Length: 176
Image 1: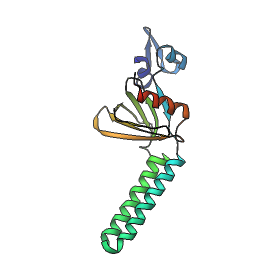
Image 2 (image 1 turned 60 degrees about the vertical axis):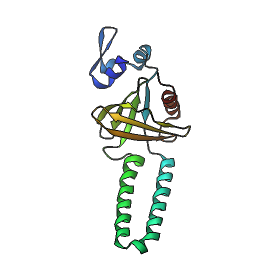
Image 3 (image 1 turned 120 degrees about the horizontal axis):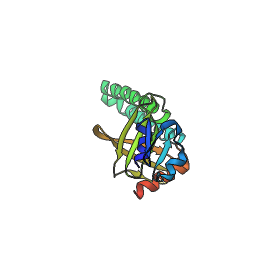
């Protein structure tokens, strides 16, 4: 596993006592050294998540419009704040087009992970034990090395490659 994590955070990797430059390290060398427990997920936009997002936000707006007559100015403020939150979550979690949006997740069998954002920022962390795993959806909770709270990454079947999602589900249900 040391070779796998060296691939992400160092310019060179130590394999069998040799230093291998990052650029020359092939996927074959990683597979020979026991990286079968690693899953790489390239995240893209999800139509399914957009439909859920849109229906939830429309229901929220309909509720606020219905209650607006009784709430007066508070209802208008709540409606505007709901629209701002909806827009920012659409860009970050559905379209993945802002700097902090997660673009790639690498999960190792020992529970460590690497999250790469749209801006190229890399964050190491660990997978939390209470992730939600279903055939069509995975909610991956993780905590960064610097601490802080748990952060979720929602992965639907159309947002990542099917085989990678299957391997992640197996890894989360039966950790190494």
